[in-house]
Image (cartoon, rainbow, N blue to C red):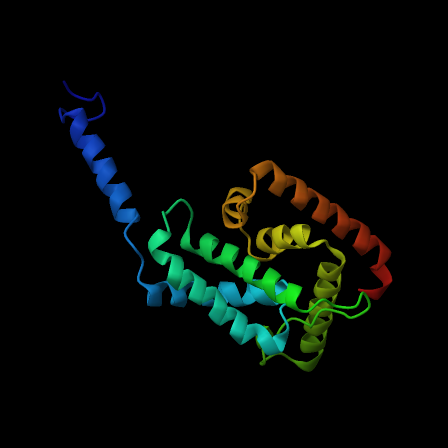
Length: 195
């Protein structure tokens, strides 16, 4: 018996090829390659999630300690970057919980290392203002909405990727993102003169 798509090849050959492709994609990734491919992403997520600048290096190390410990358990159900972003969100949450802030104490600004150093002074000033505005908006969001907003809007992850990262139902992700975007619209209207 042959498969109609297969120019005379038996169907079990195609099934075996598909199984081989799945097994190949599930091969463990070298930790050094994982770090090289995702360290910048993890750093950006930690920073955007409000980890203090003086703790970013430690938090980044914690992300990859967890990733190293759990790398053998990675089943390939999501991209490696999605998996690492989820770990970074949880580590950031832990770091922020360690420092219960007073309501008036602002988050630390986004890391200066994220800013380009070859800009003209006026462009640099505008970029700094934009980063402060983004940080001020992120401070207004509840943590679950902030997590989804950072991953969707700043890291350009899809809702299914975010759901996989955070271990949350897809509809919950869509709801949090919708609420965060609505909050952004209201925040922009309120702060139009200051932007």
